[in-house]
Length: 472
Ligand code: GDP
Ligand code: ZN
Image (cartoon, rainbow, N blue to C red; front, side, top):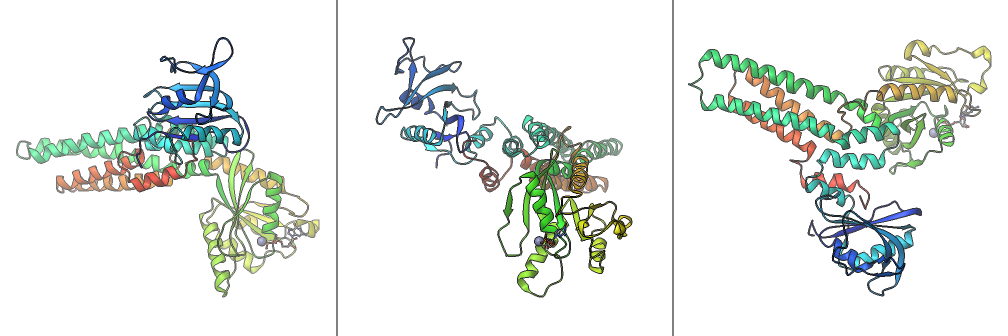
């Protein structure tokens, strides 16, 4: 498949909308437009576009789209032409803005494809924008984040990355690494010319520079990932507890209230259920970690392991107890187990116990806050939601100022870069061979360039762009 032949796709979402857009990119885009678009003349009727000045990139044309095979009119539309390189893909781009129904859009796409154009793959327009150098890979990823953003703060974070903050930071470090490498290579080339004094002085200056201007800020950026991830994906909440304390009931309550989407994670029967949910403006992913308990049954064992893993990776654990049973030995075990995690203890089934039982649990002392709740009556739900929202806001509060990492892929690349830079630093400190130092610095450069896409495997690119929708 030629990566630069002309492609087309419906760019707007599936379903019915007021307006829909079919987008064409590549050197055939103008030819296609001329074939299937009739401009509305001053007399009000439409005519084929023989005019050689058509299309002009600074104009919007009003007219009709016809099927070139039958000459039948498909829709009334607006046509835009963006001439290379001043377009999203840096190629010639034509956009046809028509009525937003699936039948119309498919008919127009079909007519476009009949002119010898190929359907675009998911993310292919953005991939071209990247391959043609308009945006770097971190910006391309931000495009997908922007479209998939589930909260306003996730949108803001994506906007900052789309603006290029991460890429700019990375490129500054790459430039500095190259300067430092050049200085070290000068040591290698002229070892006798440099008197020991100068050598040592320069070595100290280099050491300082690598430590202060590379390793330290790299580590700072790495530290932003915890917040960035929370803002981008939402905080991960795991509901845990013994069987029958009311975990699923609590989840259903939250879902019903928030009209969230329930999705069963495919796999075994006793699997983890994940739900997208909003608390105030904070996006969360809540998992019902089905019955954490010891089991000999191998199928159930898998479920228990998954429940375990889901609780272990969560940002917040909702540990559910049943008020009528009190805090059992098994509950205490769970409290102990999650003592180092951010935990909210939810004492459910509060409707079953009287005021006399008001504080039967010694849980506040062990794990912080506990919330009295009844999944049956709804008592305590608001308090729970407020508490979760506060935690979510606290976790993600600083994320959209400055460069923030929100992709695991970026974090891995950065970790590798830090590791190599740190190794170069140690080698330089111990007066090891300059060759080794320079190799490590160059490895750090390549790791960083994995983030911006200057050195990224084709397979990684495929994986990134397959996340996109068709038409973007
Ligand atoms: P899970 O095994 O922890 O997921 O517990 P379920 O949500 O399946 O609930 C177990 C049983 O407790 C069911 O019969 C529920 O109807 C009941 N239950 C759950 N929450 C409450 C509650 O707040 N009050 C009362 N009285 N019963 C509840
Ligand atoms: Zn359950």
